[in-house]
Image 1 (cartoon, rainbow, N blue to C red):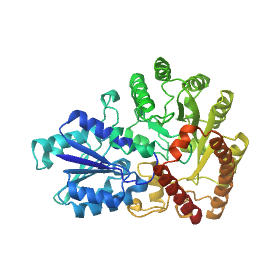
Image 2 (spheres, one colour; image 1 turned 90 degrees about the horizontal axis):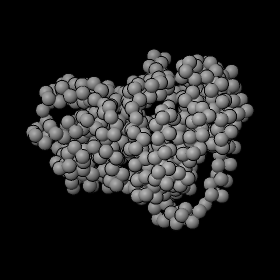
Image 3 (cartoon, rainbow, N blue to C red; image 1 turned 45 degrees about the horizontal axis):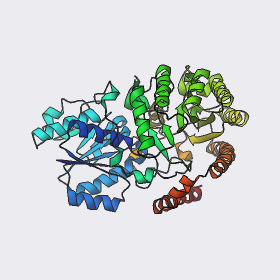
Image 4 (cartoon, rainbow, N blue to C red; image 1 turned 90 degrees about the vertical axis):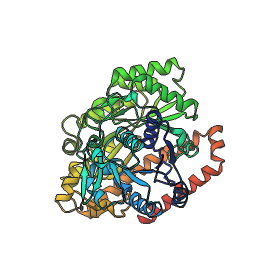
Length: 476
């Protein structure tokens, strides 16, 4: 029995698909007899050619909402080419939009975390080559067709002790591309997740819909082990920690710092982390400084106190955001921020307050996005009820969500013209801040960067990034 997992984002050159790597590690441990492969950074033509030749038992793809259309189209081609293979879909989109399964080419979908249900599925087929749908219907986490009905067994069972999950099988990925400089830094950046889940329920975020409201942590020992691997095996000198709330567990953070000290890694790796202002204080800043954090990016979202309360609830205030910036400056931590405009109920006054917040408090590195409704969030329900978006929206080709799209404006209190005007004004502030970051990157060039830059792989990557940039500029 052979299973092929596919990363559909060819030449995105972002972060490695850790979700697929986690699945691979889990299956290799639980079912070592299963032949497993990940197709990563392959052109569609090469994917189809290899699938036709190998004809695997299972073919798994993953999709977030923004790339679901492309994943669906690829799956349709695969289904025609290798009709006997079983197509499986996983990821955030099918978890939050199970209704899209009806019109999809997939045989089975997994809703929620994929490790346990995928292992169940492979075990079933190992015992009986013909799929027992009656047995499958009793296992949480599956969507499948039974005659004319769609059977939904709900969300999958979650792994409580995350240390039971093996390290992600990065060696099955095309790591030579992920060990090259990226668009935001000349230093190749590894990525790691040290927890799953988020106790908060922001109106725009689907994280808790996928991972759950109860946060689960990898142990400090396990985190240190993975960081050590990224440093020694892949040569990373910068690592991005993508936890929603990395600093919320302060005792674990202290253990991680001690563990890295014992391995003599403190001072050798620069970390970037995501932050939430109400989970950040001076002690955390001191620990981050000792750890080697070079940038912390907060979800500030807005400069309007009213809008912040609407978006994130009463657990974080504008004063917390201002204090977080001040603490970062005090301890020499590069402070960045995410902002979003165009949310429901937002007014011109709120937009002006956001503009002033950025201008007055000057985060060193920030990004502004248009608020977009994603399935599994209150904003999705709002957009559907207001007729701004249709339920099958993500089944059709969409614009790049980095670009502005006034037709998806969620606020009824801002005209499209005013929205575009404020978006451009805020983006101009962003452009000014990015000039300084570009200069810092140039001044930080080291011999190890030059060795990586002077490769065919990097030239391909740089060419692709340039094409994407030109495409976005033309759209504007």
